[in-house]
Length: 390
Image (cartoon, one colour):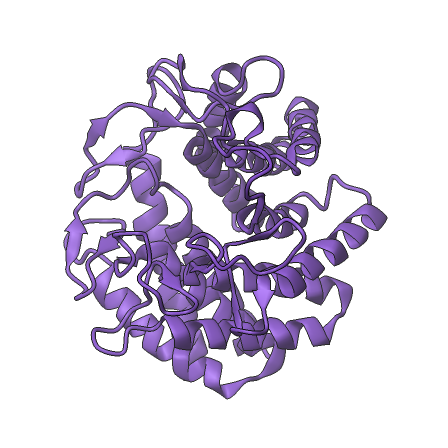
């Protein structure tokens, strides 16, 4: 496998296609922030602004400025989005809304903890890029809010009836693995190391169920398996994405045992989630092979495949597992042939089981400036390190 050629492919796609698309098509130069609802050609079809997608774009352009090149247009793109978020994204008490009008008026209450996690990521990177302590302080205050809400992420917006079936969800500990890594320049090293150990334990020993060899999306609050729709739910993309977060933390802690386990779980999940008939990775599955309750369970989504490419490459770099390269080739070919738009910039997000595009949008309520550019960036960086023998 030609790692240098592959690295160039991912780098060029990122910098000449995807980054340019979001830089030129998404910025709201009148009110600030970004349009995420963009059609195939990049035309705006809806002006609502979703806080977690706004924050993801601030993070992305700040990260590129910090790690790739100090381009003034990247920094200005991140800064103006950060200013919009700082002014309109929260209620003044650090509670981040879910969505806003174009002008910045709140539409949906701050029920979603991921508005907070991505705001923290965004302002941590923007503070690093600008040296502005106001951004750094906002990142730390938001991080403290997340820690306070960990036990009940939705707070008073939780729809569950108390005392009946209390479940713990995988998404927050998963994203905290990455958030701690992103914010390590702002947090105490001992705290990071202790927190990393706890998060790894929760992901690898609570949500990973050895009885099925897979990571489930929900467990009972005592950590036991819940034989319910929610308890049997597998999201292959989530599980595989979490494994590269875990590998990053384990590399920091010099825990080869954890790296090896994460590498193994990546392959177990991929083999289980791969569609043997049409190719691609299923969106949702039931770990006991019962019918999933999600009607979209057999769709193929962009982010699932990009996160899988990252995990496979990271696992190969850290363990040398040849099977990862075999799977990488297969997932790479499927991803580039199905999600990349050969006519217009940026990538499609949604395919049916047969691999046919169902939505020709480039951005919407759930897809924004994040998984495609981050995936391309990560793969480019890892492939370069592999080519250099690092």
